[in-house]
Length: 230
Image (tube, rainbow, N blue to C red):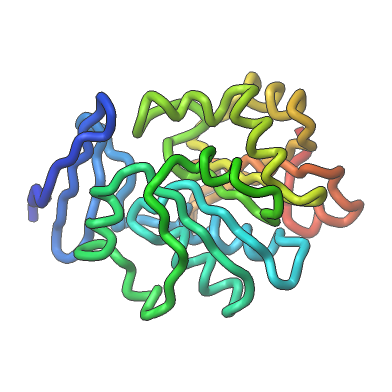
């Protein structure tokens, strides 16, 4: 069964397209697949890891990127009703699609504060986040919007660092390794680590999560969460 085009929307100089096939949705940017509801293990794992890494029993969480909503659904599920979640989404269309089409059934009636805007602008408004998740591109380089380059540069990392609590954690999803990004994160005051993520039955990781702590990792955290120091 072929994918059926549902809607298009401009995002700066990019074009986002929503497709549907047998009740499953996919978003492409300029023809490149950005996210696909047929396989969302990475989003599930990202939300789970964020909930486990939170050093507060009632964490304040900022999610950069709504996408198809699977990261949010996983985060809500694994927090078990605790904490407060804010989602910053740059595209009004993605928010509209979420409300009309793509909201995961697993999210049920539970909700978060979804804001239309740049995650850096939302982050700059406060300094009390326990966790910030960035899942807007395929790694620490701009794909969905050219302006996202600021997110992964020195100034953006500095803004995100200041938005965290003293022991807060920044998490960045990536389909590839980026040593320059790690170096910039370290210069911004983060203790960097990574977590390889595997698909069931596969020996090689298919992506990784950069886990950047605003304070040094506790002695048992690296082993407990399977993190690799960088």
